[in-house]
Length: 551
Image (cartoon, rainbow, N blue to C red; front, side, top):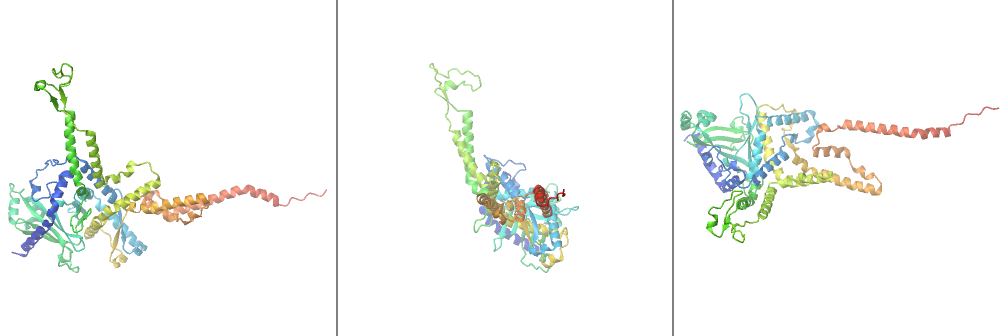
């Protein structure tokens, strides 16, 4: 067995070990998919995916759509809070903030941030749709997985994103609890395999690809990305890449591509984790008992509603209903006795109002799990003062920070590192200033998303509470000195940032100073005009009277 085949066998064995740790999760994921995200169902167990027929209906177990709607709103909320497409939700800064004193360093980071957003949101990158899929997987299954790589195009350079189905992926984490290895098992037709890997595919696949009748035969491949054991940062070949990349064909157990990455190409995030568990737990997972109950309630309500609209009839004598007609306007002889009492009755049904109330309670619980209720607060109570709005934003930020803040550290941070690495390799970034090179190019990500601003809303809320207290003191004491403690030149610009006020709506410091100078000048002129009559009168009293001519 040559070295390449030995590598393939090793990768397949590692995949089998990783798949054993995931087996416990697959049934739960499948249960969730069937009830919350049906287009992902039948993708978590073995060969089920290739047994599906394209366009096959997968809604058999989703009787009630509340959870599916809540999941969509959850994904939309995550996107609007963390990665809103209509704003720059982060910037890059040097780790050593003293470097910001150098103009060339500030300009370089501004330029890099602009380039990063330009390529991330290019149409060819497909970031928006794939990140939305990533959020859907996070809400449904507790683990999201976004693959970031260079755009494969002959005419264009850039980034390319792909949300990788959790059913294809098997993870491993390092001693610090960070996922640093991913084994992706995926199917390709013989034709697709040859198109992707060329002559490196096993001979049997190559023969099938050249035969039109067998070109669509499915074969399975494994892509392993893991830290390189023999990594040497001083090398410029594959050994100088921190992560090893291996593509293996399970047919023939042959390595079809061997490469590497300088940074981990997957941004893998988890919603919440239980100690000792590798995969995340999701809102859908926590709400699964309620989702099942709601589905059963809906089935019962549909049956009872059907019986109410089209009731079951009860009759004393079979002869009465032999020719009984339910047609509007029909006359049914024998339906009443001689005294006029009906001989046919409708079967009593349950109280639909009670059932509806029980279902509403279950729907509310599901919406709470998916944070829908939290995001509905400002919509349901539009009549609020500015202080109340700030307090609500502060409360929302406090509730969301533990959940969404994890996405910044586990998903967005590694994603930005990977994006910068790809853009640097494609030579799409400007040359780094020498002062930044001397600092080894260390940088930090400063998030400016709505979530980050909500987290800072505590500062604005504290200011509003303190200002309100100061105004009450002034009202009682008639002494304005408490306002002397407020540095408005610092407070107002920061409040504008936290409240996402557009820069174009603000005056810069020079304009503010000019406005103040003009206001002071006008006040001085007004004071002089008001004082003029009194001054003239005073002048009349102090000026000596003209001497009277001597007669």
